[in-house]
Length: 206
Image (cartoon, rainbow, N blue to C red; front, side, top):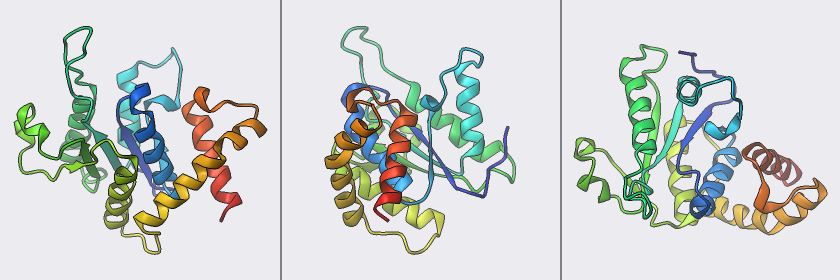
């Protein structure tokens, strides 16, 4: 398993890749990058040469921090089956912390859900953990992620959550223009495209 890089701290984002989750995902990724961290998730590579689980394990191994959103851990209306990917990847992250030796003992994660107590009905083994409820609100998710990263990274001079929310709103207003200049469309942005645009905007507005 790869060791954690101590250059730019990386954050593994474990969340649903679903259009209905897009508003939350975009807000979380923006927050991570705005605070000076590298946002990483399974969408960063699209290659048929690497099995998906191996790719996820490599990302987890190289990230000191992890954001895990369990809010889509629910029955699919079509298949009538629950979606377990997010809980599974959270388990991998926690296992890495526990059994990955000294190189991974310092990992930290935040666990999100719509309601902070909803998990108790299906994941009782997580009892005792501090789950953060975002209520499906991107602004609330930004504040939660900001406060957690600021506390756990021990890095100083990070702007407050309310300020990051305002900056995100400003970025979203300007995003269509950024896309147009880059010959992209907001609805078709790949993960790397979005990260690049966030970084470009931050540099231009520093």
